Image (tube, rainbow over all chains, first blue to last red):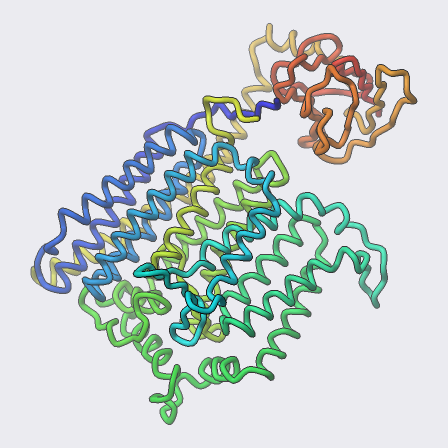
Length: 437
Length: 157
């Protein structure tokens, strides 16, 4: 019956309240400005949406105060600002999508509160290593099942059951991170010991290296079967980072990079769609190819961001509607057009704050599982942001993943809120009240 | 709504956005500073408390080894202290004891800035440093004796 070490230091209410109110003002403010910019009047559903944001953020704050009182006060608010900015942009692009996104925000906030209340101590997740891992794997593979799987925009990511469509892999990602944190905490000692020599490197025994190769093969399989470049990159990246942090051995980073280079080359050599992505990346602004698939959309994104300049055209006053997939993959470019370089920089800084706080939580976590889990979850947000922002700004070939908390999309929003709730939980330590065994 | 008002609103939004980022980043910095201040105040505690703290440990060099004497008369084990070390009957503990008076996760030893501390993790029968009950983390030194259940842990250089 080990009672956990409960941190007694309660974060002062003023601090958490201040952050949350600022987040609320920013969210509703951006939405109102977008309404005035677009139509010159207060949006018709102002009262409904403002009430959703105010009520939702207030409930989340109460849940944090009640069940995770020592949590970082700015963590939820930072995500709240991202959600608010994303919502304003989606509303500005399409009123219909905004209604759907508002529904998903409600569901996401509910999932956040439920996760905080149910997961009273993050260490209880450590007990279900393989159950969670299996569940994550099932979610990843679900779109492969004939009958319910759907291919949308060339990637087989969707599951359609009746009227309900969702991307199970979004939640699968979070479960896989939990599994990896738990698995690697148990196995890290084995993976730390180097026994075999390979050139200048000292490698762990092949038996213990197997999971690395397995993860590599798995992410290649995702590339093969689901044609999803972004997810494949994300999984492998997270795995390598977590392995590195768990063992403290940089050799895994080197092995990971080599395997990644090999996988990237193989993917490029074998698949047309990968070759196309690379060519789009390099020749997006080639005038001869503007009407070919993929080139035009990336060119439009560049033009959008260029139009925005330093401070942007103002919400509702640009024409980000010209960019294909503006509410999802290209929302960063849409924000760049209407809020400019200053707006997108602030957006990136918000992610820096989120990931930085996540890593701080990892440093302060008292148990190895919590430490690794916080690292993995932060790496997930950071890598995903890098993959999509890098793609939109042509730093790397574009792969379609969502911009966490900002992009339109229910599955992504809900699973990101669950991820955030886990970070809040680790940050606060076990919930007060009943003893956790 | 004139274009002028709209751009004022736009700049206000950007301003507020950066204000939020500034506050969020500063909260991290303050957090670190606050922790430092906390540590300083523990060092400059009230004199009576200081005496109490000094008596519970003999003072001296930080330990690097711990010798485990289990009650069943088995040979003493020597464990090197390298990182946070949990003590208990549970499988997750680095120092695993078969003493029935010891909780699953009983106590832990951890190092911070070159010093070592012992902390009771909510055990049923308590943790004792030189026969004084450990309520909150206490610094330990070479030569101190930690008792958990019927097991004696001797800290050595």
